[in-house]
Image (cartoon, rainbow, N blue to C red; front, side, top):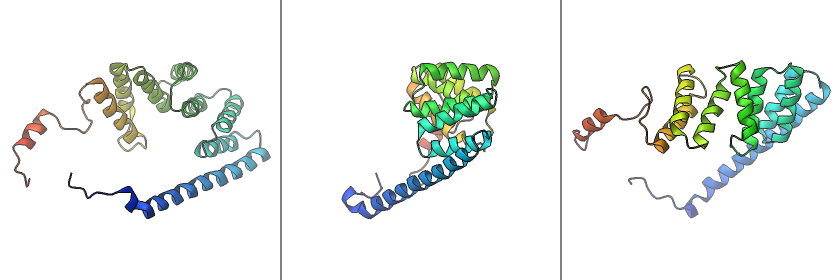
Length: 195
């Protein structure tokens, strides 16, 4: 309530800067994809080159090319579960961030081979969240949280998803997740307005 108003009409320069930055990022992603595509074409049997191409395609949101490259890498690697995990994530993004039935089957396959696979565990939790089975989703996310170092690059995303799951499911936040408990709320009520 104390924030100043920011009418859209008065933010034209800010919006143009944001649009310019977005266009620049998209152009850079396209340039990186072109470079990676050239390298892939020059070394069609090199898994590392193919995986770099897949990552560049993902960054450029060229999901069909990303998935095709990951399938090639998967075959070349004798079905490495880490590459299967990348494939599941790519398919999830291609499906509009929806965990489809084929993705669920792939997740089950990955978790049989690598029970601690971070991507697969996160998607496993998202599948339950998507089904509105919030207790199951919370259980899956808490399991992933127990395997997650505090400084892991995905910890912020995981904690945000746990908070969203708790809110949607009307559940308390698990221990260790920042949020006021009943004592914090009672203590805050006793503070002066200045405090």
